[in-house]
Image 1 (cartoon, rainbow, N blue to C red):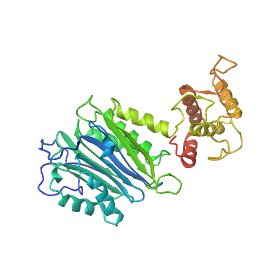
Image 2: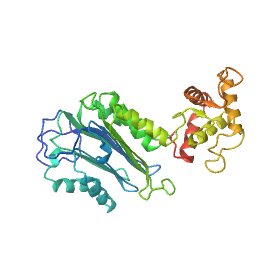
Image 3: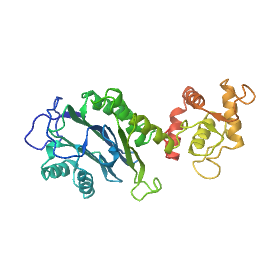
Length: 353
């Protein structure tokens, strides 16, 4: 892994060796489209997913920074943003070019390269990055196993260090790539993020998956969320992701139907409250339906936890609120089954938990 920031350079600065971190001098940018931001582009070699997550002060960051192509790789282009880098670099990767060679060639043809910040990663994990002398305040980048992260106008290098550490810590865990990317961005935000604190505006995540049946789109995208303007863009990004993926806990369940019902059944099954001795199928039948059997299983679990039920405390039958979800996971942890359940959910659905 390497942490790189750019001092004044006269040649194209493509990451090949580590550099020491230092602040940048202001630069008269020539382009109007400017994303002061931090981002992470990554792959998951187990699933073949490729993705980018990004947050910035500028509205609608998802319109310009993140670029992904299933089975090929991902690009994040920011600072004084040249969006053409997205398709140019992905086309080069698709032809079989190495990321470093592709980026070097693209920068050589760009008279404004010193005002750019670009990262590219291929489906096999090779990567290249460039931070020009133009991005001011603190700007830099870092590469590690299966990811690249970068930022400009940040409070300091600790931001992308936090992003990197978070992503590394999630390697091999049963979470979808989009989930891991959002979590990593939030780790950077906690340490300060954009130097213009309090002026947070937008965030986005884009992920593509080449595996058959994982997306209904021809481009393989499984996540494409662009929070264009919000006082808490990362919080909103997480909320939308959980709602779209129907992550258990995104709503209070009261005998509704949906993907979160399947998750609930898997968890109750693992704890012996639902279809003991059987395996809950991932698809088909009434798997997403809150059946009477599901209601009974929920109430039995809540009774075991001394929580309210229709018989005790007058709670609605089959109520699954935040506390219920928290206690379900806690019970699974105590039983040593949480990791296996998360893996079952990951393999059987597009849900992260």
